[in-house]
Amino acid sequence: MGVHHREDHASSQVVASAVKDPAVRARWGAKIVTLPGDECWWWTGAISGGGHGRFWICERRVIVAHRFAYAIVHGADALAEVDVLGHRCDNPLCQRVGEGHIIASSYLENRREWAARRNLIGSPLADQRGARVRAQYLRDLAKDDPQALSDHLGSLRARYGQQMPLWP
Image 1 (cartoon, helix red, strand yellow):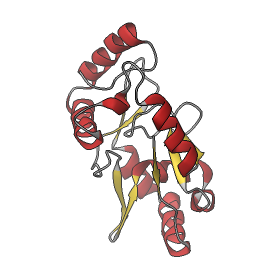
Image 2: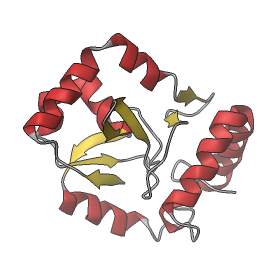
Image 3: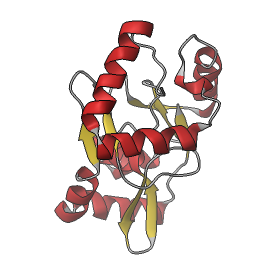
Image 4: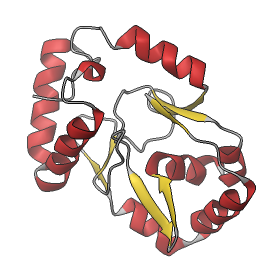
């Protein structure tokens, strides 16, 4: 689903500077893994308590990683106008901005989507381990053995279809 977080003006300027810096963008990109047969862009860096990626854009500023991805695609000004980004793929590690993945949302819309999907058979939102533990497991698998994660996701798709659990 998403994270509620609006950028203030000073933060927006820091994000704008980071988005324009090729070295910062390269550091962010180095923490992403893509898998055959999967449309998500998997974050392999630090993870927040809610299971989302964390990314240091400068010495004293951390941003939710998918918010940085949104700023890369749409600009820091557009990001500053967005309260919540929703993960339509229900993968908090996903960094892919666009339909079916990360989109501009609202707190209310995000909560409604979560409530509607959390009890679906095979929903990753129902993982009893919680978002952080699930995200750490998947992040480590994406980083250490992307083929194993790809195989795992393929078997889950065969069993559950596109709305699948993201844990074994």
